[in-house]
Amino acid sequence: MWTTPKDLKAQLVRLWERGELLRDAVTGNVRFPLRLTLKTPGSVDITGRFNEVRAWAAELAADSHFRLEYQEVRHRVQGAQRLPACVWVDTIEDALNWLGKRREKERFLTLISVTRQTNPALLPWMGKRPLQALELADEWVRLLAVVEWLLQHPRPGIYLRQVDLPGVHTKFIETHRGVLTELFDLALPNDAVDGTKTGVSQFAARYGFLDKPTHIRFRSLDHEIQLIDGLSSSDISLDADSFSRLNLPVRRVFITENEINFLTFPHVKQAIVIFGKGFGWDALARSQWLNDCAIYYWGDLDTHGFAILDQLRSHFSHVESILMDRETLDAHSLSWGIEATPSIADLPRLTRVENALYDDLRDNRVRSGLRLEQEYVGYSWLNLRLQRLLDNAE
Image 1 (tube, rainbow, N blue to C red):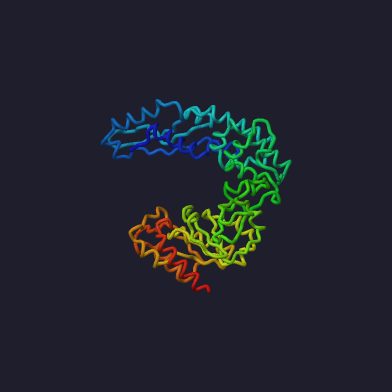
Image 2 (image 1 turned 90 degrees about the vertical axis):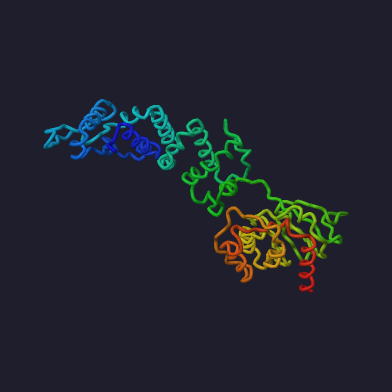
């Protein structure tokens, strides 16, 4: 159908929603006068629907938000007719008034001015995310203050709580970690940013703040191993640095992701069990003494369980899996569940047998989204397989 004033406004709305009308204020792009797309009646319409064509032209002419250019059309039946051919919005002010966004644009211009005076290196971010900048208008001055503070104190080696700025507290920084990451990366010199640390969980480490110590929770599986004087099979948590300095008479280390499995893991001579935390093994990797131990990983029997195993092997290549095999899967078919979003990545650190099962799971060769959570593996089955492992190791 022919373009109506509502259709014309929708074209401007799309430009606004993509941030284009604000972005121009940063980039200097000259967009106006702006020609809008206009679909007009054809000669067949003029002949067969002349009254509708006249009404369409009159509706456009009655709207004052844009400028029309006309074209004279000569028709063999209706004669010469003057019809709209082009639509122009002459200025950004006209567009903003039509959209009701004039106040928002003025506010954005204020943000640009403040940023240009404070830290012009951040202007490209405003050009990239103008609508987000507008949403953050009430917090923008404080965000700029945080950026300026870190410029003055690169890699400060303190906790976020210790940043001393008026109106800025730990929760404010934590709430805006995503935005601050992008702003810091623009403003800071390269040597002030640890590019190997990514994601909001590694925000503090990326910029040289102290982070909450990562704790490793473990139990002794041997009554003769005393973790603390007078205690043997205690459930203990140590920060990663303290754990890395342990000197225990341990030959075997088991890692399991389920807390009940961790608490009920059978007794094994000269062994401990560690409560895993899924992806992310950097804290455990500090413990070089683990390289002298046999390490066994027990995760969920699904694609993500194998992905976690693969990642663990990037730190300890000698890790073996237990209870993550086809025999265990088949023996517990009554407890099969559904993995909502299976991993499809290639996992180069799996063994040939592990990789065959992983392919069966990710390619849905047994059943779509198949998983067996480790908590459903029978305790007697655990004891049987564990004894088999220990016998073969002797």
